[in-house]
Image (cartoon, rainbow, N blue to C red; front, side, top):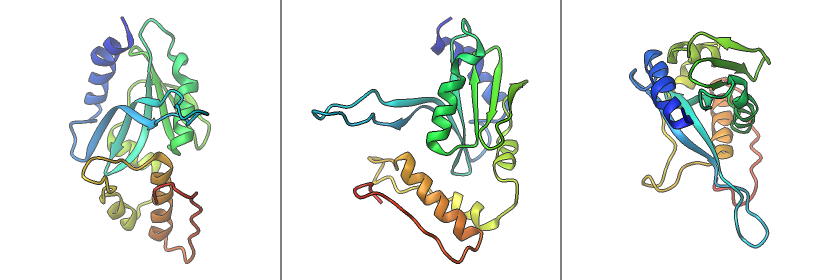
Length: 184
């Protein structure tokens, strides 16, 4: 069975059973474009990076899932999943071949097989271990997408999320360092 079939027949139903895409304020972003590809000499671009799945809840991207065909071992997607999670500053990532689910916590380094994907509330509470009313309100405000023509780049989203987290935590000072022409 190829990867697309594995996703449709095994991974999608497991996500649905955990509440993803069926609970209010949840999104399962499939084939999520992380980068358009590094600009190369001569004006061309390298291959873009796509995550098989990004799980979003209450306006925040909480986890990445790297899917592999059920003919491969579950560990085949671990390096890729870690790379994407590190790039997007996401704490939890998964590799799955449909038969098994391997969870990686980027914050603690804890890894291992799990029986199922967490529910949206479980993943939210794992990501944000303390309640914060302002963070929850800020998460409800969507990023400006210029009439659905432009999405925020992953690093822009990280910068905005970090600034909002600092405001929500009532920090008296915030420093944003953003490169020129980054769109912010």
